[in-house]
Length: 439
Image 1: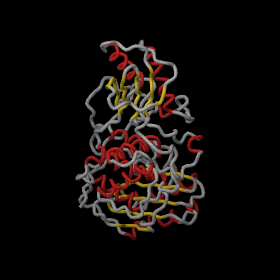
Image 2: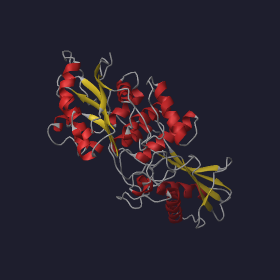
Image 3: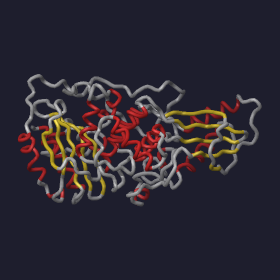
């Protein structure tokens, strides 16, 4: 029997700015007492008929265009309570981030961090990105603390001031060789960049490449933006560099000058899931690929994530990934795989996966579910269901867990690829999850 009482840690609190400050030993995102009560000893086990009755009306919603599939499983026993083509693979949209989360937590580990480094070879400084897309332009308090490029500039200036002999006229180069391949995955729409869904992929970004804080618009070259901000911060710290940064790989023999680090992977996963951060999903996918020894491109991250699933005992039949964010319409994942990933994260034998559950939005309160589950009958699931959302044109998905009327934990995944409109499909999915709360 699967124990679930201690499966969930604290909810990640999102902030758009922050400062890591002085280098510290990375630690996992803190956890508090479980948000899940222990399963009552007398909790009645729901039957398949109970679940079918609870879902019947919502399953017939015209919002699904006549096609909705899914699976519901008793978390404690593993009993399948509902199966509608649960082995059929559909585009997962952003529920694919559940797979990326499992891979990141199991391959990288919850305490791992991503760095941004400065190296020096002669009188050339190299600003080297390794995919910390939480790097900020300005230091502001946040939880968890994030690195900022101003701190990196000040640390660089201090190291250069202590150098013997002191450097002469300095040149700055940006190194983005940590990632390779195209900036757009197969199945991605050009509109993703125009609409600000994601920045052009780069392992070196500041504020995820936004043009201005609070706006969705992204710059066409995030690395160039980062280099410009870094050069200005160096100048403020008393270090002048040539006005036109170059692009080059840091030489193997280059000396380390300074670095800043991201929050731990456990916190990155929680942020990614709570707000459905596409940029961060791709960064974690590339980090998994690098650790797994695959190519540092879309194909490499897809292969590495799929391999990580298999190592965690998740059947991968039907899984076809081309990215790590779920933005591609060519991604395919069956509902039963989403359920298996969630159940694995609930196992006390896999504590490194607990951040996956902690990052799931709370129905009606946080993240991508903050404005959902507000109207009856879906409101019956508010504060009770936690789930990852997924939205593409014509595709809507929802995968998570809910406590039923007896206190039993039910894990679910519902998917449609014929959604008439997200305005109707999302409430219909919410009603399915809320229906399970009343079983």
